Image (cartoon, rainbow over all chains, first blue to last red; front, side, top):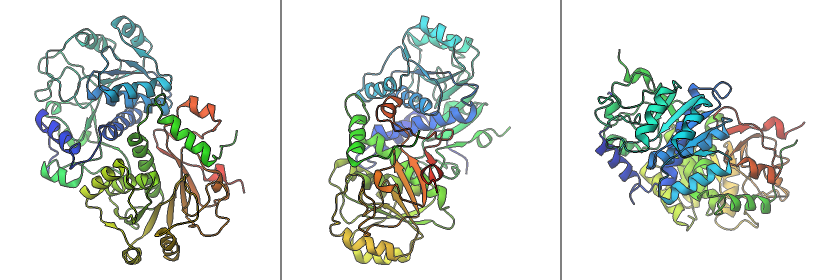
Length: 237
Length: 237
């Protein structure tokens, strides 16, 4: 049975069910596990010796929260993350996660000029700008930031959906990032069917009943790992 | 610099600081990471093929919450956990974590008779009964449960402090469990100085500033792991 690709609607529905009274998960829990999986994916591909300087780009939604969690774990793993967050989210959790990063002495940038400078002093980018609730067009300041990220030539690890890609159609408009690595959360989204880089899955928290209800056909994760490499499973060349 | 062993008061202070407005962590986050570390420790030592049936014993405090998180992750890892929880905690988070376990079809026992039966059908015990806020004497129903667990002869993985041990003095009274494996959270407690089984450390979320303030001298964790084996470091034989 093939891994299922999710529409934006279905991805939202799964999140809603997990966090409903019946699902009983808190956003804090899910974001912690998602962000940890993102950090571990980056660490799996880019070691801390040669790629210590990670620019973690955070959008204003939940995916930006995943990025903040990832930045904190990356610092724990020995990386030197810097956060680019020109438009902080307004949710309380976002503030708390940012405080946790500041307590780890992780610096935060918030304008295009500092982004330009920071890119020259970075080894790899984590793209946690837009998630599965993204609807184009790309608004300021990210309309200016995405081309800067692309032009840097740095390797990019995207979370869930590469920023600028339509969640269901993909990068048809050609304005999205072209990541080297993608970490899909819970299950890949329809828009990444044609993604041909290294592809990981994270978000190992879907109860079997939910997996069966939505026929996700998730791959087995190895041992106690929080991520699984699904490059081969998703790329039948 | 030697790893620091914590008094009960200092362990509480570190928890309080992490969850203060300045520390900004939520209990949901810390418990998720702690419980994950407990589950990973058990999985590291006892593989799911030969030790699939895990009896996760949960007390009424925060450590019982760690146990519930661990039970859920163990089920994700392919184990078949059963929860023994004769005295459920009253905190809202405890209810939510238990619902998450029920959604994973993890059964729960709550009396000594069913514990007796369950032990015959278990391969390994996770002891998440008493944590660093434990003050003896051991009250019912755990006064009857601990001897049953010991008499089972099953391997035991204890969380933070083996149940029945004084947090600072250890098992002087001789009424505590004798675990094969211990997973200390954030830093080992004074009472486990003489523990001579396999010893792991989890709770990789202490900012460097806090580590330095309390002179914890934590060991380096490998790569992106959430646990580290500190058996050698703690046992200079």
